[in-house]
Length: 285
Image (cartoon, rainbow, N blue to C red):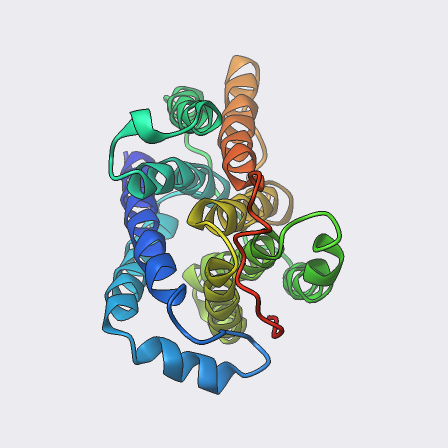
């Protein structure tokens, strides 16, 4: 029963984050360039905007709910539910009117909700759990998240729009933060994971705002959602040893993961004209 409560909290967190992203995007688009190269100036600019602050306060509140979800349910399952948040982001952008979404966006929303149904079916009567990893493996995993974020954006811009590349980079940073959060939940010596947790979330938040300044909320937010959840899903299975169920349940769970990730991929793809709609800024994250 506690797993279902954890997943319910995760869904609540996902809905709140979707609303927060929509509000932060609208506010960040009107601010001076935000970049990790000048973090103090960027933070000061963001904190000086009341409209952005309301969205960020909601995002912070969702983190408290997310923490409760991690106390009750395994990381991979929590992130799979969180991945459905991209569907709520699409609905927030269109004012709750699905008819205003493109056919691709409606397909993505449908995939996200299908993933939730499949996930629920896959854990019916099961009691999956995370296991504490070896500290060196946890350190290597978090280092890989930071390293990937550092090198991803420059290469991604060759094929993606600036907003999409920054969104995916922010997602890698948030993925490190989410994995760190799960480690902190273990308690004891794992409290030290609170240090990278703060670093990942601060850098990720600044990078995401920069992504919002360079493209549509579904481009930056969609790809941030994809990487934020895909990497911790892998961490839950590989690093934390959750593993997969047997038989039909395994097929359902893998299908659920594929559905929610596929939803984020569809919504995160740059649309025609996205490059032209980016702000002409010379600074980057």
